[in-house]
Length: 302
Length: 175
Image: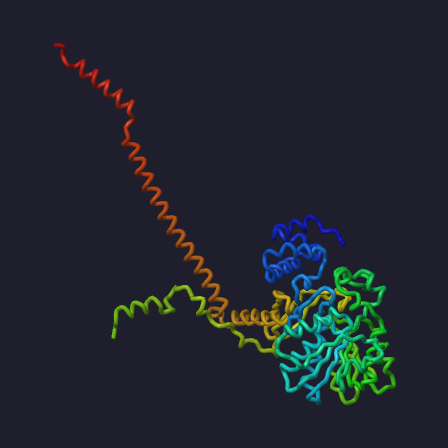
């Protein structure tokens, strides 16, 4: 951790007595001020000190405050389950807008693998049922019991009485996954699987690695993975269930290439998508009947 | 017809008395109609440094709006929620646009006027209060000094009496 200069501490003290400890998590004073404001707004006064101490030990703010905004929803976050990221929010919003406006099918079935807090199914459901004549049936599954419980909790919390969303506790690598999933028909498969290779997980953010706060506090189960998850998604779900389109979040061009070579000559079109800061973020594929999906792809090859 | 009471009440409650402080409940509405989505260029600033995705956990979500016809740029990162920031940025932009269109009657101008007038009236009140206090204080001080002047020192008085007595004794011829 870089040393915090006494001058910065003095500047922070001038603003508020509570501010200096937050400098450990935020090298810039403006960011620290903002976090202090959020802590003050969202927590009762007697919890401020505890929250600031926890944050000064680099615990993610979302675990301290308990929630993360995700689109129009507020997703509850608990230690042991990955915090929803803005990149995910971005592609889920784009996907739901596209499906709502262009999808020829009016009753659409979606499965979300490695669902974590349940943010993807819940936002998709919220967007699709809010803005269009499309009705959706969404199933999310995750191997972790903590994630499964939190997803169900979030489903109950966002109480627009949605029997359209269901969560299950399943292992993506299980041999009988299709039977356990017990869904007759799937149109779109989405997933944000773990995609950080081990060597990057343990290297610093400046070496294309992981932020310290993420490494210390977020579950490695939801983070470490390479191509095996994409292979499982394709071989366990896409091909046997005859799914017509998919969107997977990822972090490396190599993973896009892996999916492309896997589906070569199988009648699939595959494209990729960047996030708002220009980094490679998604691979998506579609069969002929879902070719409206190519609107999302910035670069594609069949 | 012309009830004197009613016209007096009306005089008190009718709002556009020249120089009156605008009421908080009667400010001009937020000019939402000035926002035309096609004229906006919206950007989400997420801090491009670092690898992003699962590797980084960002809490802030800054929204930047550019109004293409005028080139006004507004940013908002007040809340953690991008949706709320988008709404707030539009509100701020609308206020700025109204300021340009009608600088005298815009909501911002009226709010500013209200603020300065409230400040003025507050200053006036406190001036009045302290003036009155000062007057009272000056009065009591004057009274005190008067009383002090009127007060008699017993020793002085005794000496004066002795001296008087001595004088009287001198003057009276001995019989």
